[in-house]
Image: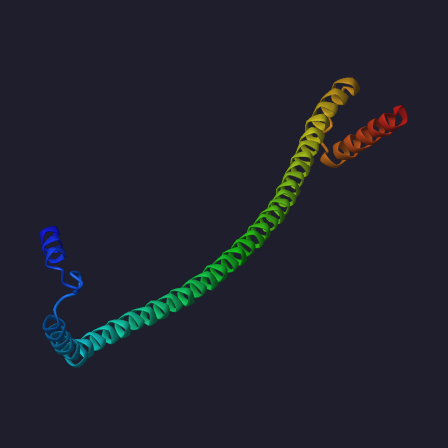
Length: 183
C-alpha cells in the first residue's frame, strides 16, 4: 500500500489514493442495497417472530411462576391456619385432659374418704361388738368366780341361777360405783 501511494505520488495525479474507484462504490452500493432488502424482507421478520415467540414464552413462564408463587403462598397460609387450628385444638385437648384428671383425682379422694369412713365405722362396730362380748364373758367369768368365792365364804352352794345372777349384778354394780367414785 505504501508502494501504491508512492507510485501515485510519482505519477503526479490529483486523485486521492485513499478513495476507491467510482465503479467500486456503485457496485458496493448495489450489493449493499440487495443485502439490505433481503434482511429487511426475509431475515428481519423471521427474527422478529422468533423474538416475539421468545418474549411470549418468557412472559408465559413468568405468569406461571407468579401463579405458582400465589398458589404456594395460599398453601402456606392454609397450612399456617391449619397449624394454628391444630395447636388450639391440642391446647383444648390438654385442658380437657387436665380437667378430667382433676375430676378423677377428686373422685378418687372422695371414694377414699368414703371407704375410710366405712372401714372406720366397721372397725368401730367390730370393736364395740368385741367389747360387748368381752364384757359378757367377763361378767360370766367374774360371776362364776364370785359365786364360787361366795359359796366357799358362806359355806353353802348357790345353785339358784336367779339368786346367783342377782348377786353377780349387785356385785358388779357396786364395783362400777366404786370405780366412778375413785375417778
